[in-house]
Image: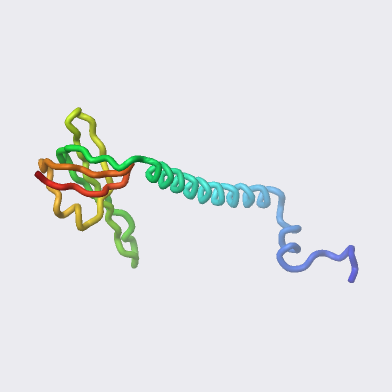
Length: 127
C-alpha cells in the first residue's frame, strides 16, 4: 500500500471539496447537533423542576381553554395539545397542559380545587 496515494471513498470525496463547502457543512452539522442538545437539556430541566416542585392544591376558577393543532401536512396526521388557564383567589393565573380526557370535562367558568405539581396538571375537582 502506497502511503502517498489519494484516499478512497468518503475521505477521498471530502479531500476534493472546496473549503467553503467543508466549513458550511460543519456549521450545519454543528447547528443541528446544538439544536438537539438544547431541546434535550431544556426538556430535562423542565422535568427536573417539576419533580422538585411540591404538589399544590388550591381553589381556582377556569378562565379559558385553548387548543394547539400542529402537523397534519401531506400524509401525516394532525396532533392536538390541550391547555386550560386557571385563576387563583389571589388573582394569579397559570396555564397548564391537560390530557384530552380532562379537557372535555372542564368548562370555562368552572370553580373548584386544582391539583398541580409545577407545570404538571394533576386534577381538577369542581365544586
